[in-house]
Length: 548
Image (cartoon, rainbow, N blue to C red; front, side, top):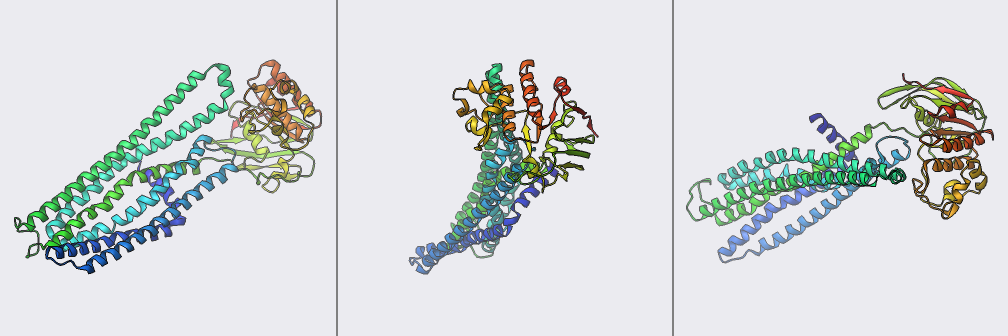
């Protein structure tokens, strides 16, 4: 646990490194503002002592007002700088997540990443604006007030010296529980987001299987777990505040009782010879709450630190997660010239803690290949490698006579068609999903993919909005639409991932027919599949074994 806490602190420190100078300056200004109060307390004590003697010193009143204005200005400037620094740190981390995820094809779950970038990172802002300056004040202000207290009365100084350290001790004990509770809550938020994304992707299947009640109950259980974790965090926060207020109240009460009895002449100890004067007693009484105030601020913000460290822990996991980078920029460029030949040599990649190796092979223009192998052998990963959507650990991929690198990947992808195992659509009309606004022979592509009748049966035909997961279509119909989309790009090579998986024989035959119709136009096919019947229609079969 200690090592994990150290890693979380390192990640948080790295996140705040670019704004460290701003934080130090703001913390210094906040501490300076707090140190003005002892001067104001002395002026108030002087003024009240003067009133007791029948003469109000107006210089004390004016000095108090000037000091108050100065304190307000310093506080305003410090809080402004802290907010700007925190916002800059959060924005930078959020941009880093978005940039990497935009160019990565795999990694953490989409829901967890969205929760981290969208809402969890905001938990760092209270840490910067509240905990960081409170930590700066607690390292200076109590010691200054303690020295002033001992200067006036060793008894009051002794009360401060004994009661003060009790607060951080109990605060640390409560804080460990707060950190664990915050971590569990943050993890539950990410899990619930991942569950939501997965269920939305499988919405059509859920409805077909009649599993609505089961899915609803799983969400209810997840929501209840999140509620329990949130209440656990709140309980710890209230406990820490109660512990702090108890010891602070006891300390202030002890100082007030001592000063009262000393001024009444009941107590004859605690000072250096002469008894306390009314001005000195009032001064000490005014200092007492502010001696504990930095500790109170730190305790109040302790759960902010726990939440920030929990977020830093998740950020560290995200940074350590295996993300497959996308070669190139992903932008549209001119097609890479040359014959659409693919050559693979010595290819090896590490995924999920395993080394995956692939046999050497060459795919000639117009050739059809089937990639066969057990689940987890790396068929989908090989398709991603061939598309430049992942980078191998070793080996080389040559496309159109050139090495597949960041310089050639965008041009190569312009010649590819992609048929994923799980179809995805834009929240737009079916026509836009197929053509992306470009003029094209949609009818011919639909006919070749054997999906023309399906589109004709939709409520608004090509103007129908399907939603991201193709709501209202079966799995086979959605896959044939992705095939039609690939056909419309006139690809030289089609990469298809399990195009007939989980389909009945009739639907699988239609998908296979569409693939062969595309191959008849001269397009190369590279298909990852478990379907032996589909593989038998290909020119070649490449068997992939898995671990190196």
